Image 1 (cartoon, rainbow, N blue to C red):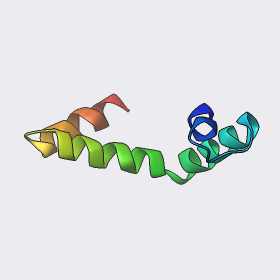
Image 2: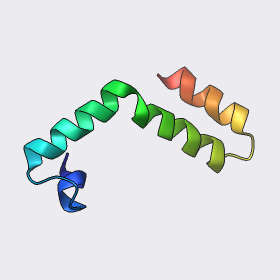
Image 3: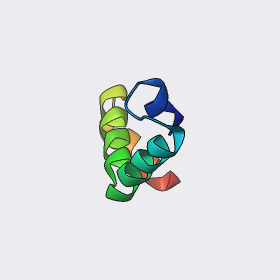
Image 4: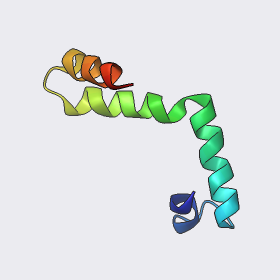
Length: 55
């Protein structure tokens, strides 16, 4: 939530926390993490397999 406040995307910490909760509930955060893992690994399939084994 604090990152939203610092970025000017929330008017108060509570608002930022609420925005973060919605993103987490919708699974958008994990989708973004999967895309990041794919982009950052020489072998995206192995990186994704490691990620999925951790969750």
